[in-house]
Image (cartoon, rainbow over the protein chains, first blue to last red):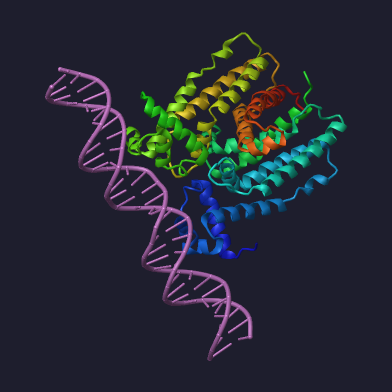
Length: 207
Length: 207
DNA sequence: ATAATAATTAAACAAACGTTTAATTTAAAC
DNA sequence: GTTTAAATTAAACGTTTGTTTAATTATTAT
């Protein structure tokens, strides 16, 4: 599945539009116009609008899997690993926010049945990685035993997603007028907050 | 803005469909058929499909505001209040998951411009309530000082939303085959997990 | 240079869309 | 019982939708 320049242009434009206006809210003519190709090219290259979406999802997830987290093999403490992992998650989700937005919608859409095996595998890999780090911390006695590992990623990614969904609200509430200041906030203050949250949950004394 | 039975039937059907298939993925004929009314009735009662959405949002948010949290005025400790608040949040979002799903999408949709003032006000009220509880806990010395209150609701609601978005994934991962078992998990294990998370963040020792 | 394949186009297609019309039925008021 | 207003209907409206067609241009291979 190799794509040429024009196909990638179509995919890129489609990703932006699908994220901004939804799959059903975007017309193939809109995509074609922005990508500066004829409408027929979308059927010609991808078969249909729906198959374009499938191609886009595979295209993006495949590139996400390349960003492998071998950064974690280092000789750092479990706490440091958790900090790094949280920062990595947030950065990844934020920089891939368009496809995440699309997936978000498609996951709960009962109209189309996308094959999301690849996405499930990514989630399983992440869960396994998280399990290993926490097990290590528990063996060292720095993490407490009763923690629901399966729900941790929901807190990390869910917090970011919810924050980003309410972007206009938080931009005003937190005085972040520009795009740059908003992005900076996500990658610093927000990230620190989630790191603190996860660390607190993992290390806090049982009552 | 009082609605008769038939109007409420249309609103109810529209809510389900908009949540399941998206606003643009739902046709007015689909709504009319399921609500067992003529297509023209939607324009007749609400003016247009878009105004039906606006009416639905107002209708639901108004009913949500009625569920006022005077439950918190009791003589309980800040920690107990936090526990109660988290459980209340989760229950409310879960039982209103359809309209939340719709709002979620509309908040990040650049096509339509819904007037979401009412929703902003709900968020501000919740934030103020949370601020008061935490301030009380800080004065009593049970909560630590450096906590980003504005981001707490993102963690609570975001976690649930992300969990629910990936419902099929978690139903398999956590062995929750039936709807009842899934709902039970949300209202017990999941809620406890979020309560623990928030409490840990608020009470943990600074490093 | 020629043949063959790929890329690109404008136009047409039928189907589905949201909305409106005009006629008819039902309900309420007097 | 008659009048008036509200509710309901089937049909038609003009657009827009995703996709296909058939013709043309560009590229590649021989």
